Image (cartoon, rainbow, N blue to C red):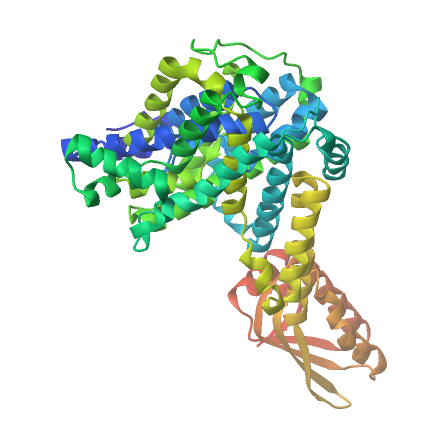
Length: 557
């Protein structure tokens, strides 16, 4: 299948995946998509509620953005939708700018993401240092956990602030409204999610617990299946769904006095979301530059990291980062018109997709269709879901999101890594991700310049009354130009007519600042009646000197 010439840069992976597509592959993709669709339901609701939005905003984002990212993306198996990393960002933008401006910022971020992909800048995202990624990821995980303290403890708080210290203050001042039933449900949800994947491993003989073993025995009696087969079937049930269904039923039948989706949001509409245009003006867009860049940056980093993980886990052909960014851009541009939230690649759902047999974007489309059917058919049941159960699920997400082992490895890391990682982490927690990314990138650039300048060396080889010889090593750029000052001092203190020889065979690169210093050195030598001789020029420094005309002024050997 060929696209028109004007759409040549736009090559969705779905088109190539459908070539030679078989019934067997479709059945595997359909099974994987069905599983991921079920997994995505509680996560989509939880992410939206934690972000300060209604649960349907997360669900329809998972449906619409998930379908668009799968249909138009550059990865074969990536699942798109709302992600935990956006919780803190979205909540902060809502607090500061309001819902309408969040929708505008999301749409503008979509345009920016599309342009990044269109101009083939997807590989630039890989230049973000790992220390920054680890720092802001751990910081976001801490903030997600803190944001769930209210619902986990069942506190009656009219409105939570967005910043770290204000949240702690508000939580502390409302501890008198603590609800032990909510805490019990939240902890049961959290512990269940940790235990569930381990129930059916090699240690599952008695670890299944009373309820699980009774359930398996009941299945044996009714279905006549073997214990091993029943265990395998139960192990395929997604943990978040098990927690959501069992604990919701438990709270409903025991009439526990806890806040639910119904009491806070009055349920989830069964109808399709209406298309609506947010109030738009260029004056507003100018005020939303920082939120727009933050959403786009985080979405790009998260989606491409997720796509790389998918490549490693699946063993399928590598993703196209530029096509993936264009798909993310289209999805984020479209979802605000249906009241959605920012979307990106989601690692947990993508890995689930791969491990359940997905091999093409068809699985992602089935995932979106599954979610839509569940919402349209079972939306009234969502009113009974306790918010404490969703908080337990999000605490589990936050725990899995964090790279906690990196803190233990810090003593073995370089001082630059420690400074950037800890700086980004604390700035994310105390201020916000925008500040953390800006300061982290600036700090990374400054430390990189410092490290590269330390690699540049000037070694004096010989010196007498008529000549001086020096050898240059490394890269002569704006951060290292001061290291040529000793040569200039030699020229100024030597008798007139000094011949200065620079051996630059080990000089790998030269920028305009370095060239400017060499020109100043050449002028100082000529004014004293001397000559500058440069030997062993490599390709890059040679090209820079030739373009500037400096090569014609000096002697070269």
